[in-house]
Length: 107
Image 1 (cartoon, rainbow, N blue to C red):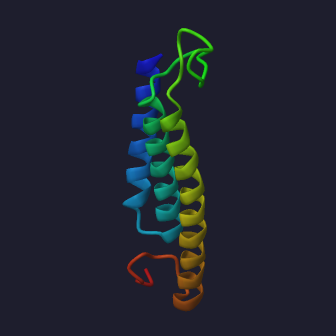
Image 2 (cartoon, rainbow, N blue to C red; image 1 turned 60 degrees about the vertical axis):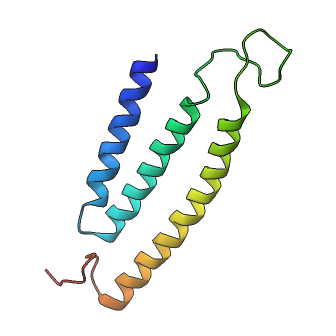
């Protein structure tokens, strides 16, 4: 299970880097969002992948670490706000420049 999880995180990271390196602002915003999702999954996996593990000590012999879960929830909220802000900036740049290029060329 850990191998499949690591491969999925790697694919999401590669896709995010590919989209960030594109020349269009919408692709950059999507790439940053995909990278933030990959980082969230990586942080979530750092708390050990446990099936049917309780988040409270003493409830079962195997428990899940609640700290990575709290970090991921916080990162999701911050990532959503960052994505909304970057999308508004991209729309404003599109309206001002008349194109979707990152460097402002009219090609």
